[in-house]
Length: 453
Image (cartoon, rainbow, N blue to C red; front, side, top):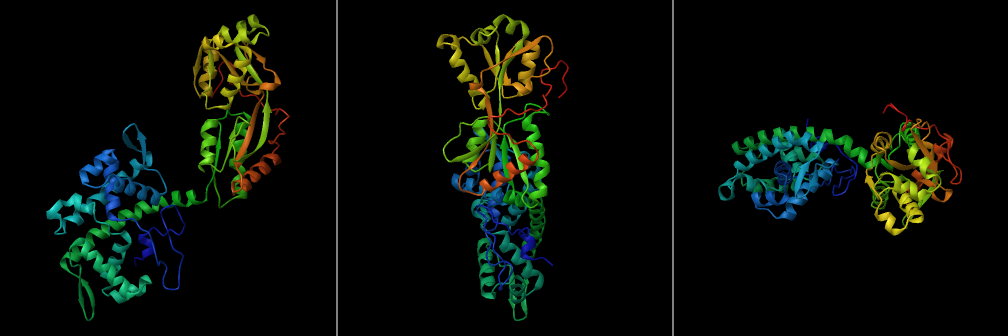
């Protein structure tokens, strides 16, 4: 038999803008902030049209109300359904996947609105966009209709009969319909109530399907630890080994608290850490903003790598080397690029720096191909350039320009405990090095002719 827990997806984990109650003696659910019909319809309209303002205009609703409806659905599902592209809103992959069910739900809501006499005033779609009936209230109507008694339904739900009666009255007022015929022996659906019941039962099936698919997102988002990292230089690089070790070891130590790893530039990662997108980050810099703690994981010498004839002709003249060939650089958001900027300022004058020829890309494989096949030079950690073929060479920069790999976390919250666990795992694996010791790791074959991805 249907219960309130089933209709609401059976969730009992808190989430922003979503208050789920603890069980009480009076019943399993005493208070629920539930999804409502208008939010479902409005959100589907935004996904279909790709514009909050167009949706607001079409449905004659305030822009703020449309945005709130979209946020409410995304918060409930615990996953983003849209991304911005200029003035347009594009559905994410998850938004596209849910589009069919959301469209089916919207059609049922519009059919439900057509049953109301209020539809003659403003049209079915605009009336549906104002039906702030919660799915929880509809689930309670289903229980009453199936049991044939408000009293029995109230006992089953675990709430007072007067409270349930008021909710049903409010539902009838919102729809402009009499849904139940009350008698001495119970309450049975009217003809209008039977029509509403059929539509609501179909809507229930769709919502349960959507909620079931969202449960995993919801639970994982509430318990997942988020680690951000700069992208590894290759399969055998130190960062790749660190991330693989953490991914393999974490479930053994934190079975109920999964680890999610994502990559980005140092600037993006540090910003995400400050904004609590990440619990901790691994960045290629030790220059960190206020409010963060960090531990240096490794320290590595940097080298300029490029065509052998360019390096042989330049000797130890770094300035001449930089001016002799175009340079492949990561963006200014990366720690490696910041090292290059400091180095170039030390060996070149302002006029020379203006004349530098360079290409920016945050893709290490692209940088490797530019160096191998197009005569570019690049700045990379020393351990990343072993195995050069005869046409390539490298020159090591002074120790003042060494690159540090740091684990960073916020001060004074739970992320400090997670960072401690990361350090323990890496230390046990021999992957945590004092800042002053350069790690000895196998060199990835980034610059070997015919290297495989």
